Image (cartoon, rainbow, N blue to C red; front, side, top):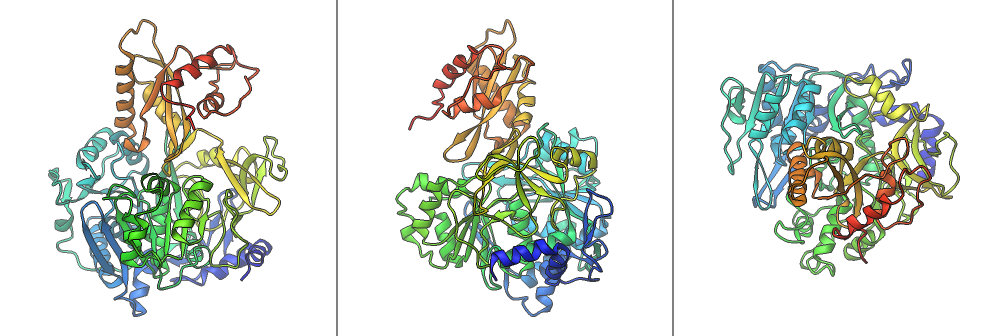
Length: 631
């Protein structure tokens, strides 16, 4: 079917479009209607339908005789461990763990935090929660204790499931001390924790609170799937907020099922026997949607990869996996390919492997530069599809759908709006921007099934964060433009959330942490351009009067502080000490001007600046850090 025809079909009758799409999943009670818009802007899709996520991901494939098909391929390049899990085996593991949780008092609507590395038990935990109607919240393994504590207090989980450690190429990261400290810091205390003990590090268990993974389910057997209404939450996934306080994105059960199932065939072009590999982490939205749920909904084989694109052991890891498992579709962040390209620019490692099974490469997570796209296309000889979406939406908003007869890819753009998304570019006065004119990317309400209906226990914050700036529209927080053919280019964030290696991070949160240092009077953090990771945080620090300590020591302490409070994922490794921050006369820090200086872009001295001479100091302070980068 032609993309244009399908998009118009959606636009002409959105509710009919999604009711038709809903027929591709298995319901306990099929919904009598699609959309409840009686309480705008809190829209509900398929609210009277009854369904179960785990049943659609696992049970139905076994019932249909596909139990011996491989559901999950686990490949740990770090541990040199490989495992294939069939749908029947997955069903057995999930039902057993779900039964154990049910016996321990977890019921429908209870929250369960999952703090796990990239191991099959993480997927089992997620599916087991969905089986009994519990709401899971996966927190990226290794997140700092205070970040985990904030999420514990917000979600108020009855249980926490964790691994004893995470494993990096050069180190082991103990998770249990981080978990213990987080529980100590949090006001809310879970009833119990289940700890999966990894061979590489056994963690001590707290008596009467912590249970070993295997001991916990020693006497359990099986349990049935609990019916869930369509609008009830499947999970909460926390994303960075501009204030540093994380936002709990709510994922509704039925819309999530319907939209993800639709994307596998229509957007990603996946056939029922395809091997689908999303090289991400289960702690991020890509891992939720396209490592765990969508491939299993569609009955595909999904790959769970524990490793890095380079260094585990070399830049040929991706190609080895493609050859070994006959991967059909690869989805990863541009950062991964920039790392591989940097280590192996001529592609000698690609020549060592047979990658002919690969049909398509999809990139998302941050803007994909043309050099990386062209390099990947030339080396792999497959279409490279950049596309754009967010934690809040859960599936692609913009791209070139490979399951449809879509127009050609335009390198440098994110593609075309997908059914469900009426994308516009507006200026500050909420007027529609002209062709190729930069503005704020927004989506007309209502959003499609599967997108966030609100934030967890924060309806007012949901409206303030996403709906207040442009009434009647969802504000994506991104800036860009639409060309004359309808192709959408995403250029930058419009707030202070930066994207480092596909991870959305709040510079405001980093500023709050830096401000805790006793020698720091004020600070600013910006996201400077980086060829490998997309953006890296760079801190500008102003010291209190009378501080005469060594500047390098203060910078090192500041870097450690951010690492301890936010975690290594922040990639905060650069800071400079300056006398003053450039500000407007009203006291606002001119972060945009600082960013242009650091990136070597042309800029005008703002008319509202209180002292233009400070900009010269900013330039001098950046010289030692080699910003702007020399070509």
